[in-house]
Image 1: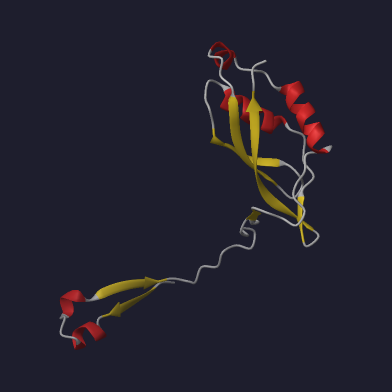
Image 2 (image 1 turned 180 degrees about the vertical axis):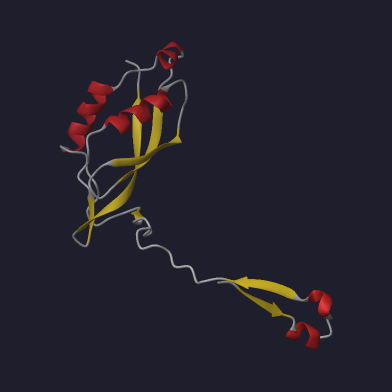
Length: 144
């Protein structure tokens, strides 16, 4: 059931006249459903930061084994570092992957592919609880 309220009393008292009367429709109050909870916060830093399984050395081996140098970058003799940002969620999955600073010629796409193929990480922890943590990872490309 809708109710119509006319808010003209204060306008008439101020000398605005009936032409400035306003109609406002008031309905039942809306309550957001409980299922639509706000998404968990993404931290820039946690007490225990997320880690690639096996540590730094395992990460270097992973990059070495999986990297495919793009033909366009090889043709242009292009080397450099691509910075990729992503979120490690509470379970260690990689989410929201994006290039922050790229160098083009297929190297940006290769960096995205490498990050998306990574195994799940050990999640970050805050106060003993797993949390979402944003990471920015430099991936260097060098022609040999």
